[in-house]
Length: 465
Ligand code: UD1
Ligand code: CA
View 1 (cartoon, rainbow, N blue to C red):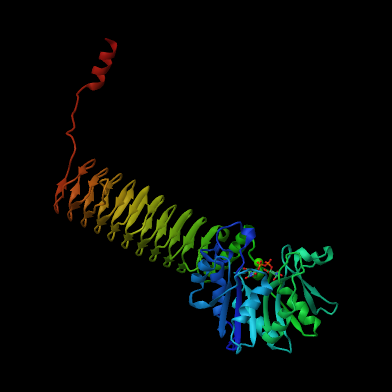
View 2 (view 1 turned 45 degrees about the vertical axis):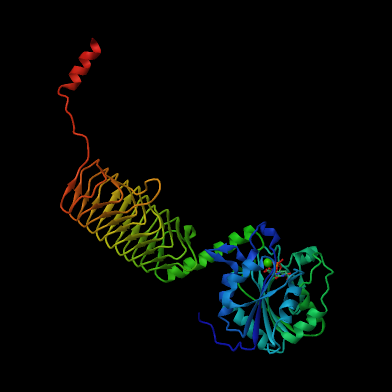
């Protein structure tokens, strides 16, 4: 990040994450809902970490035991056992905060798109003058649901009114409060001390601290930021909006890094996935979990790749990969399903309607059509014919199939595991192979073919009789 270095050793950050998120209608605490593969709170804590503040407090309450592990070493949880509002949450945090911190940045745990640079600007805006606080705002086309920023004729901030307490005229204001502020601690403590609960929700509103400060003649400086950054997730619709914005951010960063996307709106890349340059991604591709793709790959359309790595120059079309590792120049699909534990060596190929699980495929080997390979070790330059199947499960346990190098598995071979096929060995089409085939040998198991001469004529004649 190209952020100007500012000294934040005397700054404490308070992240508000104790609310239940009633409007989510969920068993999951709100800040643990995910966008692009990770919890809302994780994005917030990343940006906070970039500030290098002296202390980070995360106010937890609802579902604290689930939220705390997500915080890890990136902050200190402080319990707000009763959620009496954002003002009360900040009071609770301040009680647990060492006196040496004279400046406090407060932000919500449900605003995953806020960027560290914006937070740094907010901090600098307060430090630039004799102000008690700086507050982040944005102008929204549809401000519904947010607190509105009240300003006087000169443009100075007078306070914030929550939507549920606002008059019709106030609701028409399009400048909203981001619930993100940088405070002088002493001024904040004084303002919180005189908060009441006489409002529509019966809560201690942090927003009232702003009017409290202004009423005492203190200065609160507004800082207007890009509207997309301040989106707060209160319900499922906002969750999907936040996800769309985050997805767009991720996709743009990959396009800048040299990845082509036929349609970014239909490209779904989780946070943390890596894609090499000159890779081309077709529509309806889902790259999730711990996935890394090399350079010059061609992925999609309609492909899901989860927790997998691909080398350079691979092609995956209309396929489903999970926990799979492919080296360079591997071709997969259309219509392949690779389940966990597959290792595909360079130049190998998995074709249409092939399922694989826990299988290694050697350099240059091919399983081109309609096969199931499970618990198999397949050597190099081996060809597995159409319709071949490893019978790896006997109803009780899984067994291994080992196939050597340059082997030829005839079409429709049933490999009844445990079984081994040696190097340069072959199996006859349609064989059920249950005994090992030695190197260079042929395993064949099928009934002998009979010929009935002149069968058509005899059949017709029989019909006439
Ligand atoms: C809040 C602001 C609103 C602003 C909006 C921006 C207040 C009163 N309102 O409204 O002006 O436009 O954010 O997104 O501040 N929380 C606690 N403890 C509590 C209550 C809330 O930790 O007792 C946490 C929540 O988990 C959440 C954050 O504080 O992460 C904000 O609370 P929320 O209920 O989402 O407030 P909004 O109604 O969105
Ligand atoms: Ca909110």
